[in-house]
Length: 483
Image 1 (cartoon, helix red, strand yellow):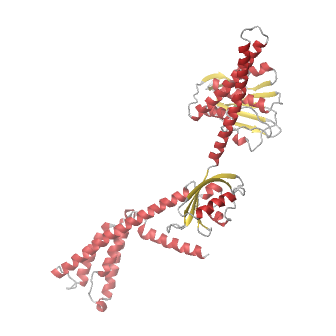
Image 2 (cartoon, helix red, strand yellow):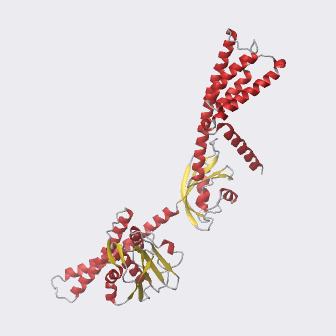
Image 3 (cartoon, one colour):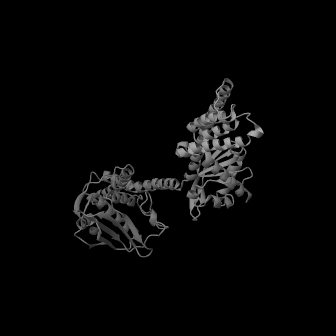
């Protein structure tokens, strides 16, 4: 309570100083205030001196006016200070320099006036310099405060006894707690208990070495209960008299860590996915090489067919990687033309119908035409249908539905498979993400939906999914209708 009261008094004094004297440009104040207020003080001081004239006499006639000149320089600027200097000279000479009631510019008076004006000039320059210096300090303070409070990093100061003495307001952006709430929490209560012993060991070593800095990444629990990855940079400034604290700067690097983990997983998956068809292709070519002198062998066509399947699989994987690279570099180009959606869907899914394992049922408005890149939209639909076949393998009926929604055409691919967990839905269109059910790992690089989403966005459309566990999934996208 005492600290809050002291802080409140300091803020009040600072506010008064800022608003009355120092803050801002003097030219921002009205002219009548800049010149009128100092003149008013000259009048008040003159009246005051006249009332005490019998008591104190006319010694030091210019003394009290020096304070008004100083105030004028600070409050109004150089112009008012010069005006008040001249006004003070004339007023003092008229009322307090003999002969009183008349202007006297004899040698003695001129010397006093010269000294007074010199003092006034010195005070004006000094006051102006102080004002400019204070404004610069205040500006730097405000800039520093804005960087601390509005930045994306959290800053914590901890004293030698381990008590947190400061927490930047920006911490709320990082972990959800306000600065006041965080300071009331026990130290490290939000850290992962499994990581805490190692972290405390690092901090103990830091305390023994003034000026040392350590950085590490650890987990921290957000106010909403989710775990975040935090990069913490901690510096021992206990021996720095200007700081006298342990300074911790921390950032939310969850997205970066997650992406790095996904990349590592992706490299492993890509290696595995490419290894299988390459091994099969190599085996087929070795057998074909042995049978090259006997092309009439009944196994010869089978080996060629197997080699072609392996090559198609490799080509598909490489094409996916190339498309992902084009998306990342902004080089996924589209060439629009007008075409009928239902006709395009019939053609693009013909290979699935030939297998006669899945029934593709086309429903909706067969007349709708869109202006889009037909090959790219073909790619999107094939990917959605392949996903339905992969993840809803027991659902032998897959519906392709064409609807009109305002000025957009909507294409939906619906299955009656197991559905998708709600926690996975927000990530389905992320790069490298694969929504494999627990205990089941499907083939693929996790790039199909990511590339499909970018293709649809290039067409100014939307893409999404509606799914319930046990009730199947419906992936959909929209395209502008032709005309």
